[in-house]
Image (cartoon, rainbow, N blue to C red; front, side, top):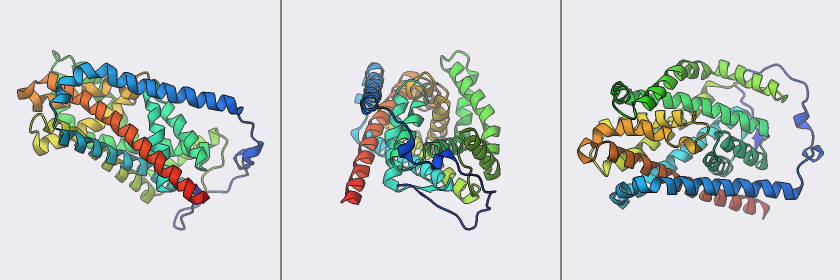
Length: 350
């Protein structure tokens, strides 16, 4: 369950009048039970269909590369991806805590790891909608769950852009080769990064971020924060996010290491390129989980290290294999998080 927390060292904001959010939930008119069940069933079926389509559509391209990977590399890659998802979930929990709502670790994992399955539905908003609904079931008001997601997302973008500097040399080189079929996608990715960097840096300042959150709460007609966002809270979100994206880069490097030996330089570029690829993939609104956009950036970054083992073809195989590893990690993470949360609820009820 969520509970409001206060920080004695934080600067208070002016008090606000009561809001309709404080009204009892029983007074709110909800959907009929059958309609709620039907919507849940449609969401689940759509997610399953999206995951199945993602795997089936990519398998012909990745089959040869996948079969050539050592099982140890694949297992470690899945573990690194799961660890990165855990870190990102903790970043979301840290954002919720700084927004005056503290959640248990199992509850945060369920909200984030189960909620992120919504990204397999075309349209980038479904994962956030699912997270809000799961947050409400855990006792977190929808408005605060939505704001926690926005704050975590914004700070995650900042951390990812900082890590993306590690891969800029290889991406710039790929963008200059106009004969490359991926050069156009890489140039678009770099333009997006160039626009986001100054915006992300300014918005990550706690004072600015607090004003943005207060504005969002005012638009949503919800009570404002009673404490300003803190440097320590923002720092925790950034630290967890940076760890998460670093682990995602390790996951990619482990797959590439099974085909070549990219070394430490390859590890740094895998971390940077994967961070940029994930951020750019968020802007592919109509593509499930940024399908296609993310792979173009990864191919451009991996090709120099795989020139002796297949070049662009091998890089494409690794990029799509990474997508399948993430799909497996998504399912495992969601299943474990749901099981842990269910056991926690059963234990509390007992």
